[in-house]
Length: 234
Ligand SMILES: O=C(CO)[C@H](O)[C@H](O)COP(=O)(O)O
Image (tube, rainbow, N blue to C red; front, side, top):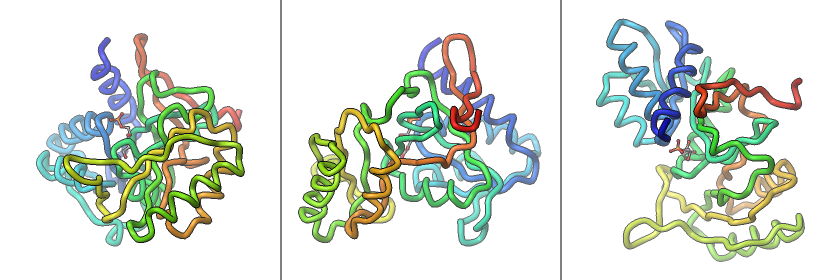
């Protein structure tokens, strides 16, 4: 099974958790897009949901495919969010933000009663951090914020390159007009502590550590899709 088919398998399994009438947070990325395509087929068959997109890119695809959308201000309490991830550990802690949508993804997921992560086996890790951690920062004082992130990480024993993400000729800009720093720490043994410390830095708008937010993960591999629950809850 190739990577795309694994994403479709995960998306199909996630669709079974979506009920008629749900208020649904809709994620960003290639796996989320497979889910959106399947959801659109159900909507075309008469299934009723109201979706809140986690990015402009997701909004455009949903609108193209006829999925009814509302803003989070119109629907501030959601039943379920389905989204992809860059890494998933056994406690269902995540790294997200590879697509640069982590701020809206986190706001939408935290406004949802449940979050289901969809991914292929390549995203499952023992320890978060091999994927560069995306950190969304305010453009104002970006050098000072980079220094603050570096010092904060060092206090936790973490080091690595901090690179401002680029796009075309310039810097990548998020839907909120912010920048993304990709932090290559390699291994983040205490993701919870790093998340808390980053939250305390004024120039940091948000970071891609999603701690304790996912209710379950649907992981697709060669043998099909399996459900992963948090090792902490078992
Ligand atoms: O967090 C995200 C976007 O900000 C994505 O969900 C994450 O990058 C996974 O994307 P893909 O399904 O394309 O691997």
